[in-house]
Length: 480
Image 1 (cartoon, rainbow, N blue to C red):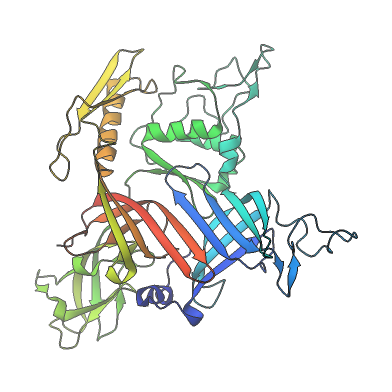
Image 2: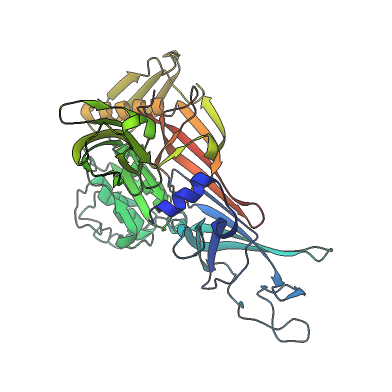
């Protein structure tokens, strides 16, 4: 993932997208990069169901406006069709598509990849007024997992089965884990399911820092698995309390929920009035209002003593500062992937609703007669739900009380987090990713940290690049 450069950051902050700073869109369709794009739309969200994008292009010869149908597959040299061109057999289902976007004057330096996948559908439209366009519908690489059905032949018995068991038993030897373990970690089952659907291991990224082995695949916990490999992979992710998603590079990810750190504590030496980059620089940037500067004697310096540059994520002594030249200071702060201020935030909607909340959460293993129950209690705004509104789930994968209790506790935490939601219409920051932490900073309205659950990017050749972000409450920003 390309980091957001200081130059890119300054363009976005200045909100001046003209000339060489206008939004760029670089599209590679089947190896061709010289196809004009009218519009591009991308939607990405939690969950690994294949993410999609839509590309619309003019179906006209760039140097001959009356030559419509220029990109059609059916063009050939017969009397009834126009001559074929270099784009023959390019814009068709199955072709690889890569999209990059950003700000600046270089398609290679100033853009970041936001999509890679293949074409699903091509729609050519012709109007009586001479209009000719092609709309290309694409899906990400994870569609192979969505579409690949769990299917194996049981040769030891001569019967055919559309299922697979975890753990692998000695009686069905052809059902094997690519990780040779008959009682695997749950994340190994996830890796196995993804690889069986067609992923290479290099295209999988998973956490292994789970709190327990989750070795509950003993005793046929995953018995008679059916459906698609995505169904199995998602089941594992749900049990682990993890997030599964396809990223902008086409990789499949399995990540622990809420495992990000957003607090900085740096010891720096400031010389002259030269800016010094905070240690948590690069992709993340500090929130100016959360910065506190002290020395080793705990003397707190005011904001008049130092300057902060958001674009470069760096701090320096101000003119006339009480901080001594060459003095060692301690800087504490909250940081996140991006701070949206009124200048880059066109609109914000805050949503709180009891619709998807439950006063009580109950998990059971009916076969083993195990029950775990927890109440949601008062929410962040003081409202509460009746415990008569109960969410009940049977989770046979959990085979002891400790596992069930951990599951309901995690479910409770996740449900509370999703009570506060925001939707932002904002300047497009194409470097942002699902699960990034952002801070929409509107005084008296929203100042917390929010975790991105989904976003859309829309490019129009005439109006530029826009972004809508959906996010849930993550934690305090340290801004008061």
